[in-house]
Length: 80
Image (tube, rainbow, N blue to C red; front, top):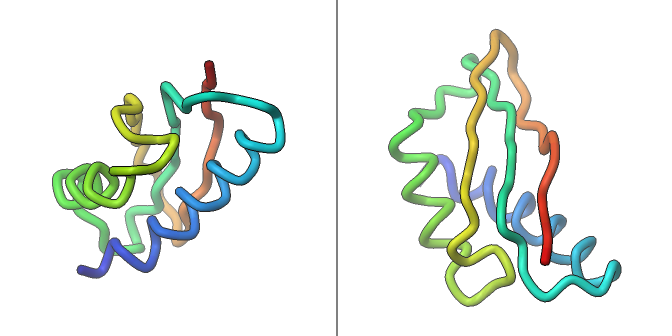
């Protein structure tokens, strides 16, 4: 899956930051995805869900914003 190598570091980074802040869970993630990355929204969401299992992000609401560009950027995430 093309999305796996893009999403794994995002999940790890968010989880690491949330743990440092003492969070118990991540409840929402907002990500901007460049259209030129070739990512399809359905595949991105499915891959995110699969990779988030067993992490603090499992079950988190994922908001994906597409824009003309070539990067993936975490805009924000909410924690409990």
